[in-house]
Every structure is written in structure tokens, then in C-alpha cells.
Length: 517
Ligand code: PAF
Image 1 (cartoon, rainbow, N blue to C red):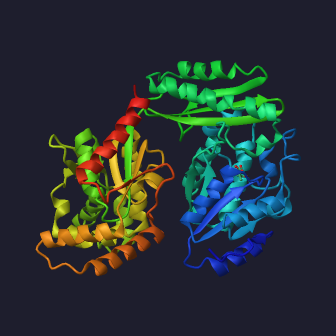
Image 2: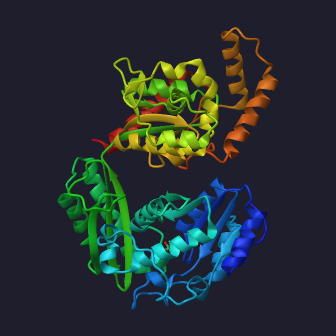
Image 3: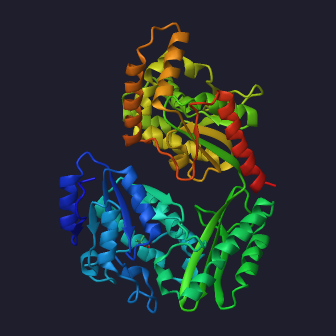
């Protein structure tokens, strides 16, 4: 963060670039593009960007290209002073608010466009808003090129927009990580939206039926209904309880490709749009047919790895051992005789590194790379000596997070780390934050060292080391230690390992009982 001062407002591309050049050398930049009218949904994006980056840039630009003639471009809310104040409170460093002339100097019609794939724009909102996503893609691509941030944050509420932007970033090799953030809802269940501003109090109350209808379908889904017809019927029946609400679409599609689905085999995006009076509202939910995921995060020395291994064994789940995954990549690098310091060489090996993890009959995790079982090899001294250099590479982490998420599609696993519940599996069904006081962790460490026949340092020295490690782990740029908002904290100072395991298993059972009956 640049400092606790008023957010710096920049209205031209040149000024923004100059300011970024001064402030962002060797710093990470998080970018939150908005059209203003900020609400709790936007604030959650700003807070996440604030947590994960050194510099936060937000933009406010009501983009004419994404409004069709007759849509609400002119009356779209523009409470600029309030937005600016909210940005300041959320710790935004730079606020970019260009005019239409600055963004499209040759005029809207003359501007080169980014055209998303037709398969992604013909359904859902694309059907009734032709040209909308081309307008979004054009503005966002320009903004990403202007800001050149490390991460860009978008809400899951605009699920079609998010999927299209992810595809554009991938296809056009734009060097930014797209971060999708969960929908934020009012206590009534109504998703926050700048357009809620148009609703009367009665309409706001009526609009809660959108989320109710999605949760009705979700309940049917968790009871075993997978078929599009049944799920859509659930939504339609619930929406029909509000007479002046006119559904525009109710669709079940693949969350990434947006292709229509007949049934949910692994994941489905159930999305709706409806008109209430003159206001068009959208909402969605992701349905997953996978088994639950348990994410265990916490500081070093809290007993995560032992607990995770044993929880997996007791519940018959896969232990997604991320340490073993880093070791597997290290083994691959050494096996290919590449230097573990050569990031470019490591990166090119990743492209052909097919990782598999399974559990054998004894409940032990088995690791294979490109079909070869290397469970034993990854524990060798050469791998041990090189694994931290490999683990420090951003490209390796990105590759392994993608692999972990691929395993996560099937679910039925336990994973531990520092950011499993916040970054790797933000939608994990059971999130645990396993912790212990610094004093207790120092005692445990001292005991472990004694048991290994070593002469351990004093408790004071160990406590100072642990506190320093905690500080480092929670401030590091790459996968910092974070407790997810919805994590259950288990303090293990006065618990045995067995008691900690029992506590996690009862949370898992409570979840399964409520959701998989
Ligand atoms: O979601 C929005 O507010 C807009 O579509 C965006 C991404 C800022 C592009 O104009």
C-alpha cells in the first residue's frame, strides 16, 4: 500500500501509467475494474485485492460499448464522490476514472473490438443483449493492457462475463491472473448489484425469489436430481410464486465453456435472469456432484500434516499431499537433468508433466509422473535438497494449483497448506483453520527435536523463530497464510492429535448429513 492517504485519482492513461511506474517497481499490483455504483460485492473484490497485492488499482468506467440502445447507460448510477470515499476506505491506492473520450478517442464505432467466441455469447445474457460481451471484452482488455497488473478481480455474480474474460486472457496470452470472487448477498439472499438501486422496497423483497429458486434447485440436486429438466423446473416453480416477475432465461451450462448441459456430471452453472418491473436481475449458483473437500490451513507447526494424513485415512479420502506434488515436480526436473535453478527449463518441463495421485489399500498416497510410480523416489536426498528452490517458482505453484484443482473436480479429498481454503479450493465444503499458540508450538518443536536425538534450542529461541515464520508466512506474496472467513478454527493447545482429528471428522459428518442425505 502506498500510504494511508486519500486515494490518488487519475483520469488519463498517461497519468495512470506514470503513477504506476513510480509506485509499482518490484511490487505486485491487483486491479479491480468496475462501473462504479459500488456495493458490498465490489468491496469484497477490493478487500481481496488489498489482501493479496502491494498496490491496488480500481477503475470506474461506465462503458458505453456494453450497453445496447435503449438500455440503462444514461441512468446507470454514478455516485462518484461516494465511490471514491469507499475506495479510500477499502485501501485502494490508485483510482482510474477515464472519460469515454480517453478510452475511445476515435469514437465508439471506430474502436477495434475484442470478439469473444460465439459459443460463449449465444446463450444466457448474450441472447437478449447482443454485442454486450464484445463491449465488456473490449473495455476489459484495454483496461488490463493499461494497468498491467498481476491479478484482476471479478465477481462470480456475472458468471458469463467471468468465463468469457478468463477465456480471453488465456487465448490472448494476457499476463494477468483472473481471480473470481464469490457472490456477496444481503441477509435476505438477494445478490448485491448496482441495479438493485432501481428497485422499490416491495420489489427488493420480491427479488429475493431469485436466490430462493436457485437454492430450491440446489436442494433437489443434493438429493440426487442431476437432470436439466428437473433442475430448471424447480427454479421455474419457485419464480412463479412472484406474479410480476418475468423470467428471461433459466439455463444450466458448463461453468467454463458455457455449453448447455443436459445433466450435471461434475459441475454445472445454473443461471437465471428475470425482469422485475423495468429492472433486469441476474443470479446463479454452481452445482457440484463431487464428494466434499476438506481444506486444512494453519500456521507451521500446528500439526496440519499429521492430522490431514490421518483424517484422510479414517474417512477413506485422498490425501492431496501438496508437499509430495512439489517433490514430484522436483524429481521430474532432476530426472530430465535440468537445472533446478533454471526457471525457463523448469517451466517447459511442466508442460509435459502428468501427475497422478492415488491412495493404496493401506491408505497411503501414491504419486506417479507420466505413468511412473515415484512414491519412493520423491523422498530421496537429492529431491529433498532441491525442493525448496523449485517450490519458490511462481510457474510451479501455478501449475500445481491447477493440478490440485483438477483433482478437486472429483472431490473426496483432504488438502493442507496455507491458502487451501482461500485460494486453491475457495469452495471447499469443510474449511478448517488448525492452529496452536506460539508457546505450545515451541514446546512441541522442542519435544520433536529431543526425540530425534538433537540438542534443541531454548523455548525462547524457538518461540522467536516460530513468530518470525508466522509473520513471513502471512506476508509472503506467493500463497500467504490466510484464514478463510468461513473456516472453523480448531485451537489445538489443549487437544491431542486424536481429539483434533475427531473434531474435524465431526464437522465433516455434520456437513455430509445436511447435504448428502
Ligand atoms: O462487471 C462490470 O462492472 C463491468 O462489466 C466491467 C467488468 C467493469 C467492464 O466494464
